Image (spheres, helix red, strand yellow):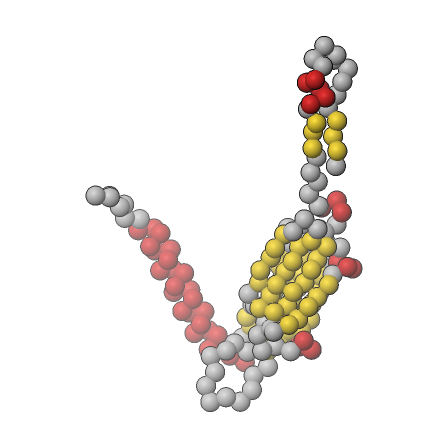
Length: 155
């Protein structure tokens, strides 16, 4: 039989988050005309670049404003509502600022907007790329009587 400990503080934290979400949704209903929201993102770190994907369904490219610095990406725009009998989609202005884990070359960014997904490929600054150095120990251990040999490294 497993003994489980009751952790009231973690349950209270879950309850607090749920209450914040409920009151946040109520506030958005009250201020629907001024409601702002943030699109979901994915950030992927590859050897040569950082890839940022943002989920923007139903938004046209002309309604997007994308700004890139060496340290961050700002995505803003507006999802314009249409006349529906019922809609549970979020409309209005949105903005998302994403801090980048490494410096990027903001003048070499490539963008693609297809099927409601914005993909930004942000090439890393050369100094920000991970460098792998291989140390060759075979030469240093092959002749133990010579002390002048040093391990060689290659990039």
